[in-house]
Length: 201
Image (cartoon, rainbow, N blue to C red; front, top):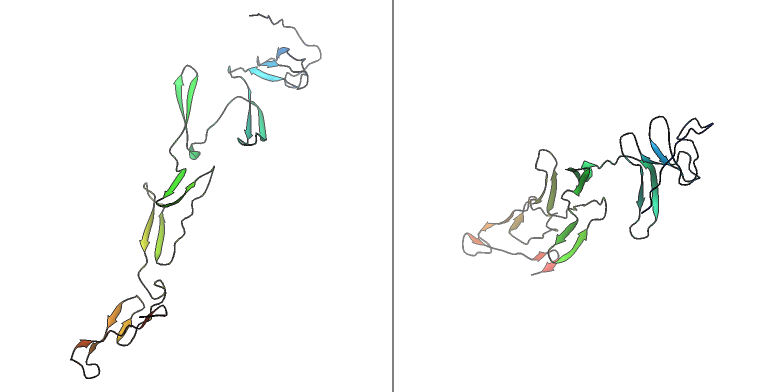
């Protein structure tokens, strides 16, 4: 293992370490004591040790599948994790931290049907159908989604056609008329249900 010493000396004509263009591999620092490593092409070089003891890094966003880099932030000395996105950071001591993702709903399963897998910041959309109500309870501590049945009507039931001596109210209540019909037995019921949705019975 080789050991190198770093000689120091004043750089004539240089007024700022952030704009000084140092040769490749040259370590330099300014009046604030921040150590920088030159590469021969980047003014100010790369911070390798700051006044707080933190080394600068580059943070990038990239596609895991294609490897395409979308954005780069250089000279980063601090990372912040968004708790609203589910991140938790725990200090393990000795300069180590643990970054964890809190519980999330990634896999949505429907019994007997294909499931859904969330990718990134997906949105789950519940769509009510005729006769079904869906309500999101957003107030309070325990937020929830509630499913219910809409009271039956001729609309939600698809349109019921009743025959003679049967009646149906707008709320979906089916009743039979009781009385003498065609000279029959008193108080007999005539259930002449002829068709439902146009189908003969």
